[in-house]
Amino acid sequence: MSALFYTRCLNSLKGEGVSLLRKLVPPLLLVALGIFFLATHTHSSKPAHPQNAPAPADARKVITYPLHRRITATVFWVGEEATSENAHIANVASSWDEHWREHFGGVDDPNHRRGYAPAGFTPQENPFYCALPYSDFDKEGRKANTRRIPWAAEQQWAAHESMCKNRWLRITRGAKTAYAQWEDAGPFQSDDTDYVFGTAPPRNTVNHHAGLDVSPAVRDYLGLSGDDKVDWQFVDVQDVPDGPWKQVVTTSQVTWE
Image (cartoon, rainbow, N blue to C red; front, side):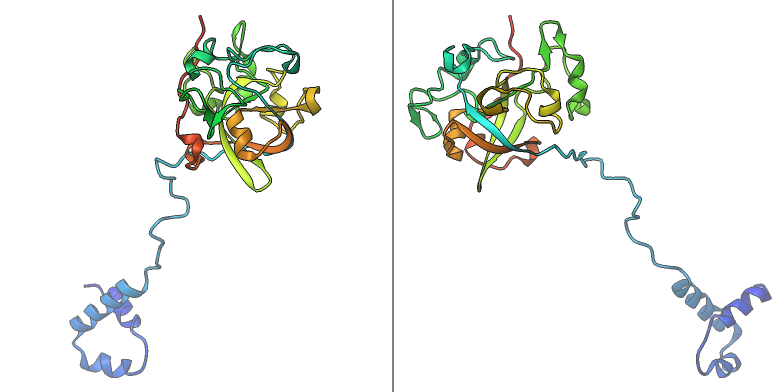
């Protein structure tokens, strides 16, 4: 054992009685004590999980979606016929489903209700639905401006898979909040990316610049009269709490002929 190492071991011991200890303790035992001291006092403690450690594999990317405040919400429903009140735009089909009424199960009558569902039948799709003035498809196929959609890079999308259909929204009026799935484009617009995915006001000027259509179920849950101000925001499916909006969840995709 080198003299240098022996000296370091001796020098590592501090405090009263060191001189006596050096005279009385055999050199080899003193070396052993020095090694023990060095091992237990010269290494700095390190956190079990370094601050720069990689995120867990299952950690999901958090996206902060814009909060749209004081947006005029109007009421529409599956199977609504074209009239002067809705600018002669029928809702028998939706922007993504040519057979929306059939797939829903019938007309979502706003005047005859059983709880949050129509009185005449049990809906086959979520009665908590809404429309925003954007569709990711037009007559030519998928639009180029779908890159504006915040979740566009989340996955590989099939050729006829909508990036928008079935997406969840949080809709708030006063102290009450409802959740609804995006199932149609409107009111009166279908390409307003600056509003839907940004912070601009709605491009539409009809019905007090309406920027959101809501179903009778959302209307009833929030106590809307049909022309009210609400706040809304996109929300990831993992963050949708339990409620009547989860009794039937729509999963169907684009249906065109």
